[in-house]
Length: 154
Image (tube, rainbow, N blue to C red; front, side, top):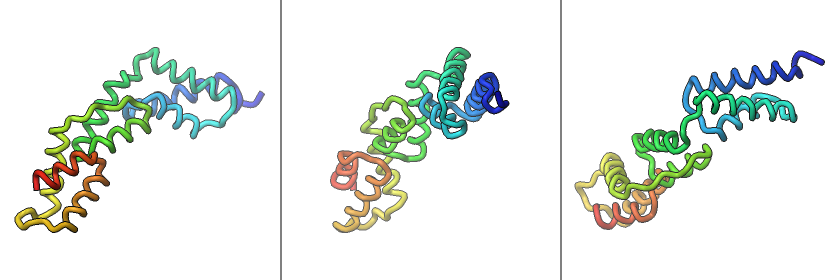
């Protein structure tokens, strides 16, 4: 049996990689599985070692509650002025539960972004409003928020 295929070494290497990843930042289970599968060869022994490493992290309480992790990531993305659709897509990609939208906060955030990017002293033309709409949609704001910003607040 070669050293590379030694099950104990594979198990130890996957556990070490999980610890390294979690020491840098919080990861969801889905993220850990993806990163470990990219790092280690795809065979039955390795997949078993990956699952054992994730269970090892759970047993040591290194993996946080998915709801808490989702909320922390959502807060980080809110600070970056991302819209709720962007945030929920990001969380879904990470294998985390979605967060509920706060309509007032979304509207306030969208208005701040628009005020920072466009000169609102003069009346916006139809083309300008279309630009604003596309811009907000690209930032992940939902159509209701975009409509409110363009037609009610500007």
